[in-house]
Image: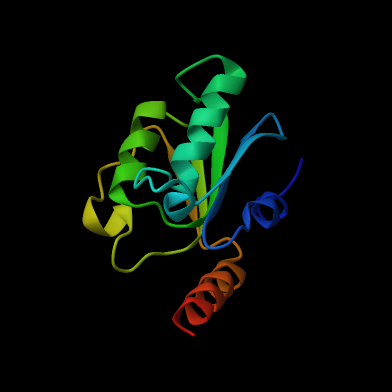
Length: 135
């Protein structure tokens, strides 16, 4: 079986990346495209969840794991709730807008949560992105 660290390496897009894994297979991937698409809902998690649902032909992702480099926001947390995804793994916590800080009960009660996987690497990706954006 592959480790969380293994899959998190594949999620590491700039600034935020996400992927959905089912039966140790990457079935969907997304990265933040809000600027590119001029769409405030085009977060990495939303795109990955949509692609996974299409791939499986199902709206519920109970047997899947979502890997994301940054703690999802409340909007993504709501979509994650409705997808009934079996597990979420994230790297860096979002101290300002993270779903667990803003709305701790937003995730589905059966969804398992693992945090801090490759946290330092994920934080570095975000830090570099925002440093480059400001210069």
